[in-house]
Length: 252
Image (tube, rainbow, N blue to C red; front, top):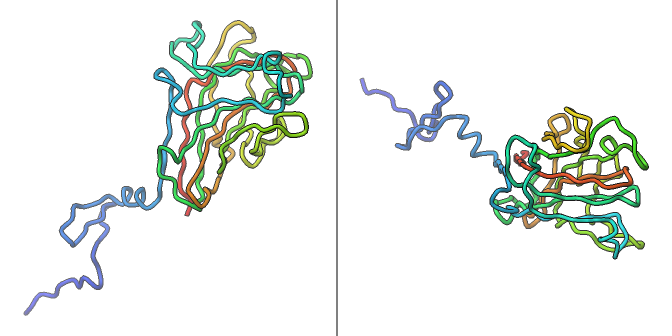
């Protein structure tokens, strides 16, 4: 009796023990690997010993021509010496005189990675900030640690500040202080959790595990990441980004 064969029209592969076995002569592929290929994932993980790695800094919600008075600065610097891990970080600082200073860093995703056009991505942030600002204290206009709100998100246009109504305003929606916006969700406050002095810095981690964030790329597949602080404290704030990780997962 002639043995029956499996028709190619009926089946070209079989899943056995989590592995896809092909009948076309190709190598076996794990089911998890096949799923990963089907759903695009972009992982960006930057430290700054070798440079800025494509990140730019900016400021909004302040009057033009007051950059010196407001002590606005963004640069690559060594992290404070009291930290265990000696490395470089993105230092950003400013003195808030309007009860609303927004300081931020941004990076284009599409210039390095292939972002699909008109595609929704879930963005998972995981970044470290070196801060010397204690929590639970009082200051001008608000708490130095509890009234400086950390936000993270993304935009389909490059986040830039422009003059509007006598102030620099951001062209992306970062919300208002404790409230997040469409392009920047609230993920915490800048205040330290391990000490109460203002001299020493500590590394504080931020993520949005409890607040999933989604963004849809534009028709050209353009996306920029946006991370910053929205200040209700009317005095000087400084901090360093020591590590920034963002994972973009395609949503189908």
